[in-house]
Image (tube, rainbow, N blue to C red; front, side, top):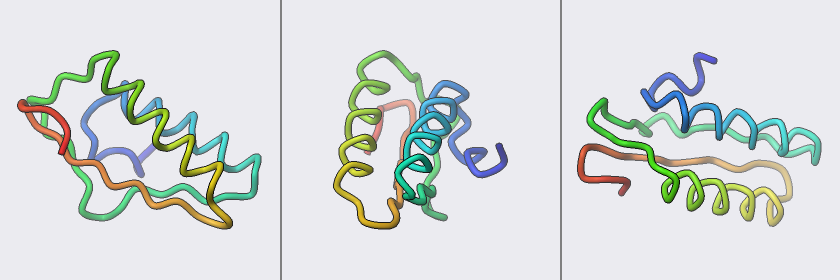
Length: 79
């Protein structure tokens, strides 16, 4: 979806789309912040997927109505 386009990582976009579906079942709105971006040099490995997936899932469980996700990454990794 267009919402995840700034990530430039199909794997990270798919992860967040799945977490968005998880949030929706709980009545939580999940959105990517406007200043999020992942440059094309970013390599999305299993560690990054696990960490981001767990953090977003935990945020969804703790949220009352919405979760804003901020991600920034480049060839050096995630910030």
